[in-house]
Each structure stands twice: as structure tokens, then as C-alpha cells.
Amino acid sequence: GDSVTQTEGLVTLTKGLPVMLNCTYQTTYSPFLFWYVQHLNEAPKLLLKSSTDNKRTEHQGFYATLHKSSSSFHLQKSSVQLSDSALYFCALSDMGYKLTFGTGTSLLVDP
Amino acid sequence: ETAVFQTPNYHVTQVGNEVSFNCKQTLGHDTMYWYKQDSKKLLKIMFSYNNKQLIVNETVPRRFSPQSSDKAHLNLRIKSVEPEDSAVYLCASSPTGLANSDYTFGSGTRLLVI
Image (cartoon, rainbow over all chains, first blue to last red; front, side, top):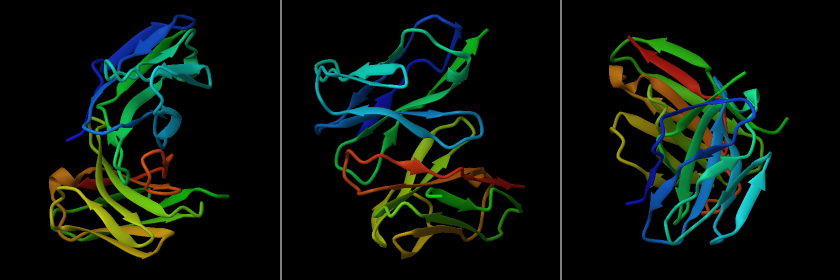
């Protein structure tokens, strides 16, 4: 079956520094990859998505590139802000009707 | 306001009781979902419905039963709750069930079983 791996459970950074959150996946089919962000006590919200190989997709200062050769979809931002502190989920859909989520990475930004 | 609405926000109950959670979306979406988010924040699909029809039924104990009266409503009943059912239950919807669909989540129902 499908699986999504996020290797970092917690990432702590100082405001203004760059960040990369790792995401790799396994699937038999051609997938759509998503990043969802969940702030404390809130609902997860879509951050960005892609299905196009080697094309960078951007939203709200975050960006990610789907690399099918390495089955990766890492999330990056060049300068993190305090408001970026949240739980970030990578997710995959291939056949539809469900999203398979990774275990999530907590990002904590210090002043 | 268009969104996914869940009730109740929070529910405390004893082992063996029956509970029901409600979910309504006003986005006009065709597909709705129930996800369970456990204490480690893992998100796992439980059920998905498309226009009132059950599409996905993951390995979920039989005490869990979803109910959909129309495409805007998807409720969840747990017949006899157990301690491991303590979690946040998130309802979501998407325009279609296609793989590229964006999900909109509700704020969740937090269940505590004592």
C-alpha cells in the first residue's frame, strides 16, 4: 500500500533562517503530493500540492518540488517566521477518495 | 459562511457508552471523509463517502458506523466506546474524490473515554 515518510518529528529554528522539511513516499501509481499545515487546536489546511515531476510549486512563501526519481516532495521556506510554528503533514493520493498522511513534523520557530 | 462544521467540539463519556458525531459541509462538495487523529497527531482515514455512497472503509472496528443522509452530511456513530477511541475525529470534504482534490477539514470533535 501507499506510505509517506517524514523523518523529522520536531524541527526548531530561529526566526529568519531557512527550513526544509523532508517527505518521501511509496506508491505503485502516479501520485498527487500535498502539504497540509495544522496550527495548534485548528483544522489542517492545504498549503500546496503537485503532481508534475521536477516543477516547483509555491504558496505563502513555502515551496516544494516533486521528484519522482527519488520519490520526494520536500517542503522549503527561505526565511521562517514566528507564525510558521505549526504541525506540517505531507500526504499522498493516487487512486482518489483518500489521502495517506505522513506522521507530521512539528516546526517551532524561536524569536 | 461556507465551511465544514462539526458538533460537538468536545465529548467526555464512559467506556461502553454510545456516541454520535455530526458533520455538515456547506461547500457544495461531493465527497466527505472521517479521519482519526490520535494522541501522537497521526491522521488516519476511516471512511470516505461520495454523494451518500460509501467508497472507502478502512480497517476500522465494527463499533464504528458512518451515516450519510445526503452529500452535505456525514455522521459517525460509535456503539460501545473503548479507551483507545479517545482521539480527535476530523471530518473533511473535497469537491470530488479525484486524487487531485483539495480537502477542507472541520475543527474536529475531541473524544475522551474514561
